[in-house]
Image (cartoon, rainbow, N blue to C red; front, side, top):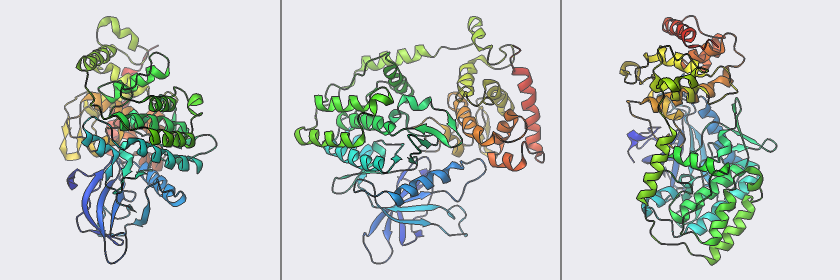
Length: 495
């Protein structure tokens, strides 16, 4: 891949510890991986270097990147297993001459041939011939991780690495967490197709959202279906539609309909992993799944039948999804928004649903509300979806900086920095995710919780915390806060 598309850009030939950086291999939403050659004698001669920008955070970047790096390092230091990617070295860059790289954590990992996600892409809609063995090996590694008290938190084909000898390794522990009793606590994140629906209902507090090891079991079921058939288990042309289908299944409103080309043993295996609730899913721990996968792999062979896309089914799904989201603005529909904000104010009706969605993402945080979101959007852009201010690198109705926005997109859309223009459908829900992430960090700060959040959005949580509230020594912020207070007064419901 091209270096200029990487989250972390490292010059070719740059030396880190005993390694010389080569081509870029992969880049996620918060780190980048490069091929590297050993400088001097020693084995192995090559490695994958994962660069984690823990030392270069700016005000409006995510301070939780340092926490995620700490999670990754902690797993590698405390858990070892042949099915977990092996760490060759852990390095912290000391290079004051290069402030971008200075302070970064670098993991030197054993070099894989490719990820299971890349192999699936090459398979062109089919499953992988070695899927049964890969699933068994992943379950073995996960069983060891769980026994050590950890939750992986982001198990998916992209984090299953295939080695040159064909063996599988579980990798990427940036969202991993150690159990504290029956739960672990994870930061916001994860890829929606592999996250059980109950996780979205868990409130996000200052230490993260509660999660159990059965969340990984759900992810095993989704990944196993994909590895065996090339298809995800829930229908839908978008991640949002698939998440809705998964939620309908777990609440009993729809049946689980798996691809036809699954053998019966694998169908039962995946169905058990995708049990609709934690209590049922917990009966099938990773150790028992490992044994079952080994037995099935020994007697079965993966189906090589071509998957035929059913165009009529996709069309039906698209129509259903379209019908779910009705447009506001008709006089008869306005009344349902009156409890959130004044519909006789200047809030554009086209954005009502998006503003309500953003303002109700974390109901336990009363400061995050549709009124606040609407007031901020008016102060940011005057509700202008086409705003572009390249001088400060801010765009769209919420004045997002691209490098910051990507962290608040839906899971699965954070692999690269988005390119402006940013439509309201992207910008407004991201405001809600950002506010929900900031709110617990500002709970003890004096003053108006709403104003503290808006000021942190314009600056950072650290700035507001250090000032003990809204800073008074920033003229631009003072002007912004004046607009915000006016908007809050105008938009707040009268009943």
